[in-house]
Image 1 (cartoon, one colour):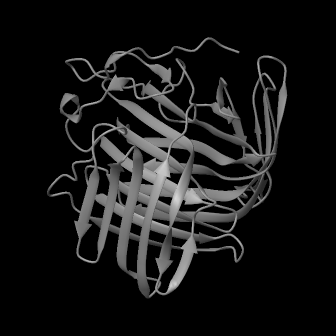
Image 2 (image 1 turned 45 degrees about the vertical axis):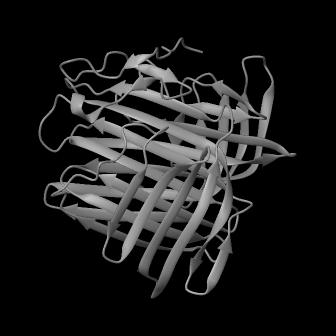
Length: 339
């Protein structure tokens, strides 16, 4: 396993807007401030993304400021019927959304006619309150509280191969959930669900492709989950690959997403393979549902496949122990952006 750089405490950016240090940590140890950004124009991208789900249904919530537009999105997924529905609202950012500089403190509240999003820190938990007047012809409402647990998160600070371009990201797995959502008169309880946070801030290059996979669940009454990914800048200093098992976290260096192909094109609904150079990761991923979208408007292009399904395989720890992954629900995605 390669040696990776562990972030130390301090500001994220120097006086010119460049990363002071790249690497990883288990928490948001470097301080981000959008006022320190050194690149003008439309390169700054900020978002808060939450996924909440169990084996039956899931909800994905996004609030993002991509500099040239804002986005507020709700997706509801039904894994038994293998269907999903997404409503996304967008607009020009005449006034910045003011997303918090930290994933640990600061609240996000965003309202427009017909919808409201509130991501609030309250009593040591994260409370998500979301409403949308018109969702599948009915009103959508969600009110949940999320509890984070020790050794369930990873942070990366990575540069791009272009001056003053970087990505700062905090991902949290295995947050337990209290609450529910409704669509019209239909109630969907989420007490047996887990939640994942993807908090991202950065100055991105125009063209990029990323891969991300995340899962949270139980194996024989023990918590198990992982965060795997690459394509988020130059990750030569450290990866974001982390495995969580029974209250402990384990760092891994590399992973490759092997997406199957059919007739020369990627076949997202067939069996994926995840593997590492050192053979300490091997996972098979059987898709259930592909939440996909495609936008191609002049210079703006986004092709997204977030595929939900079950993971089976193993992680081999440095001690030599091989921890089996059995039918753990999660997702894997490939995203291409020209933005």
